[in-house]
Image (cartoon, rainbow, N blue to C red):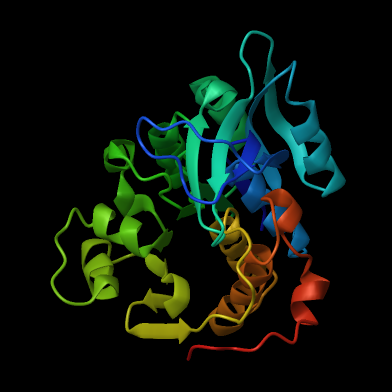
Length: 301
């Protein structure tokens, strides 16, 4: 079983602020740091650090994408399917992180929006039925990738973030795993929720496995009649930037390594807790040895 992550590659410009900038306001930041990021890159590194082999497909600018390529190589992520563009800059994000560790993010797509059908075809021809295909919403050609991946029988994992109208152009019935938070869940159900969100998602997408992250309330999983829950672990919250990406990478990585769902939820919850206790995106993602040896306290059942 192979794992393909067709996703974004960004340079993250992170500004520390006491509070987020308001409309019409100019304010100074306490500091600025540049990190490697993008939901795609973060998830690939989380997968790799969970102990599985991962192939990353995407695009960078030739002039400024070298740092991202080096980071992926250092983490043993396969980079054979990443294209380099001469005339487009690498995607980037402007991230404000406040004193509570919360963030707001402004994205510029750059090379992430230069994916072509030919690129997709050349990548997918190397993968077969049962392989994992992990997707987020920071690249173009998402509908084509979903359709072609489904034709090949790949297990499609969708993290519909950032959530926008493009998600509704996809054949969402092809998705095997939805990895999403509460806000994204409400949006993807188009507000048609009566009662439990998890049940609403399952009703709308009956063939999919649902992994719903709930912040301080932990995570819930549903597959048919099977419902599992897991709480969060006590850590100081420094920066939440890559928490969801770490959870996604560790969850799929744990499944690929043969762990059952309950253990995958536990390992993913520990990994994402460690991530929020550190600054940065890629740099904050732990390795599996640290996760397995962690003695964090579970604070919510």
